[in-house]
Amino acid sequence: MRILAGLRTRLFLICWLGFSLHFSTNVVREHYPAFTLIDQGNFQLDEYLGFHADIFEHTDGHAYIGNQVAGSLPAVPALLIFDPLLDRLEEYSKRKITESTTPVATHYDTEYPNRGGFLKLVTERGLDLRFGAATVITSVFCMAPLAAWLVLMLFMVLRRRGVSEARSVTLALLFAFATPVLYRASHLNHNLF
Image 1: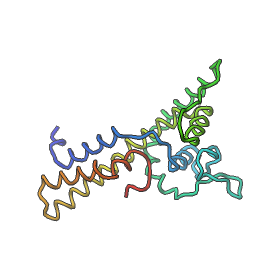
Image 2: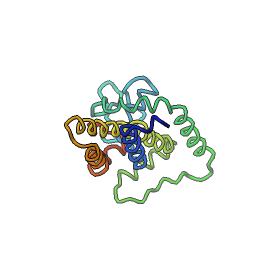
Image 3: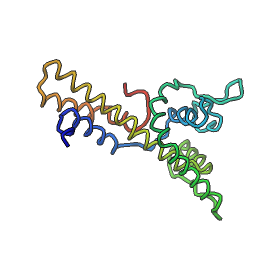
Image 4: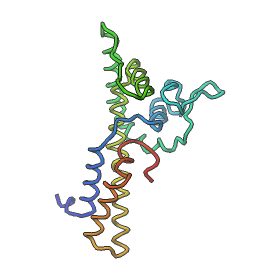
């Protein structure tokens, strides 16, 4: 346990854990290019056309996303590691749909019609568990450690500038949990840095 004795290590782990506990199950546009890069080796989003307003059909007949795909790349390693689990969850959902004698419940009581439509689409295609797990994976194993690293970098900059250790820890934790960093760490996005 000597490795946990260092302040930097503890600060990083506390932030990683704190950010991980505040994960979000929001599927955002950055997820789709990561999914297709892992599954198909390209950025053609044909199977996700209609899932998000930024996914459009191009003149070549394939669907693409109307944002920078580079924002999706940090999530690829974590999603690739957990891809067998995600595949099993998808198989389970699809098997449950085919074995069910009643229609799949897709109603979502919300004042936002797009959310209800998205849930209906995802559930009907058997992607609900896969998408939910993917959001947790990208939050816990991508965004949370990146945000914790950012907090650690701030701490180190403060220490190099002569700020006391106690004050540097306090300011770093305030930066982590009292600014939009906490919100940005909860779901895959390119706005953290």
